[in-house]
Image (cartoon, rainbow, N blue to C red; front, side):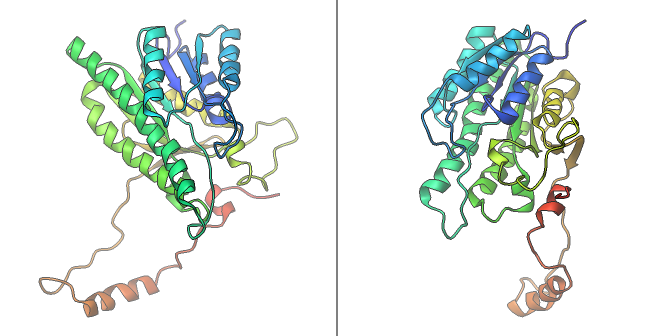
Length: 313
């Protein structure tokens, strides 16, 4: 009996721990050969010495289960290292079919306290890291398409966040990067559709090293049930989006956690006002917009329990 991803090759970035690890294991379980990428720095802020151990351990785990995997120690925010990652997949397995961008770091700070380096480093790893790998994967698929004279198989799954959707006061760099990833995804989806490639983004909720502070007040179950915030709730959606079954899913943003998947619509116009003359005056805008916003709820950040749909113990 064939598996959904039999014969396909996947790259998963940031796959040494947490979400990336769960995603790499799921893709392997579904039959893909997996290139396990992780820079291996111990600090969630990108600090510490790089180590091949996290990526090697996951690759070993896949091979021990009968799958195919190779580890890659590389910083995807570095353009040439991202090139080497894609080249490793093609050189080892003959092709690349699936790219899962997951690597990221956190350097949280309020906007008035954030340093330039804290801003640049998070944008670099998340947004530039997604761009780098996508650039080389897209070039690979385009070249293959031209060689065969038609569409080829390609899947991109990018990792955004509800910090972009709902706001996150202490994470302006992270929220901006995750919003940028959605824009990158939709642009990529349009550009690569004619080559047979899809690109989608997920907003996962999971208890990982990256979110240990966010979910500190949400207790893990003690009765043996799967934690609602376990990364294993997210990885099946990644496996689906990587598969032939998701051929018609393109340019989409999906929230996923704890047995729930929500499809997020693109922004819609909530209200529209027309000028009575050729252009608006200050006075006319005051007359139209001030009452409109006065009648709406205050624009406050959602309480954590409301945003996450969870209750604290």
